Length: 360
Image (cartoon, rainbow, N blue to C red; front, side):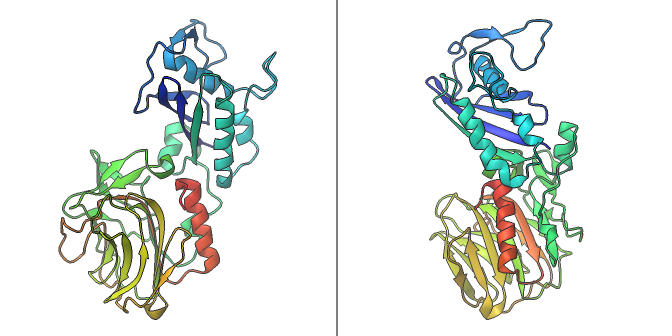
């Protein structure tokens, strides 16, 4: 079991960010946007290992950060003289947790950190390290979620931002995790891969106005079909295409603050804030079409009966890319099914999304 943990720790001198993987609890430390002066938190022996033959010493914010990590290596009550000290995170992991326990683990870490008098507050995000890349980085086997989009029938294509090939920081290909081979490749400008800092601390693909990915192999998708997209909407009053099938079936974010379905005419339309992480569920099914953001009331209407017959474009308009209507937001994940999902299946996908991205 591998957990990625990101804690934003606020002190009287300012905030810093503590990141670590809970497979071995050796902290990988990094300063946040407002670095804490090194002179504020004293001088001590290094605390991240049980034995340090060199008796190395630390100063400043690493001194505090290592003290906080040490709290996660000690079971409560094992420190003489302080029965309230410690949270045995490794013991917690050994108790057969699943992705639904991430929020409670984060809350327990925060509760432990604020016991240190130097800490004013702590906000921790916990995510499970998924995929081969995470497993290789840690030297351990990546956990298998109890549910993934592939658990449902009718999966046509599945793209997740932690599974890309890169050329520098640009996306070279976005593999299709469904196994159907509908790999997305750049046409024109490529989106940029960012390894962390998205919803739930996860990686994301960042779109500029001209960026687009396209799969020309994804053909013959007739209504009804359903697309799940986990995204951050564009900033400000701008218009952007989230995805588009052969210039016919698409989801568009409008500068007026709405998302709309289109398959020959404008159909379901719902309010959507700019610069917001959200779970977008769009069913294309003629007069039974539906568009929902997070857990808000779904929009209904008839967007037309157009089919996704020739290709799929992500982040722009299929029929002639335009810098004026590129997505200009983040995309975390896109999942395509060749049927209408059941209400219970949509709930499963939302739970899956929450476990990774804290959305919805």
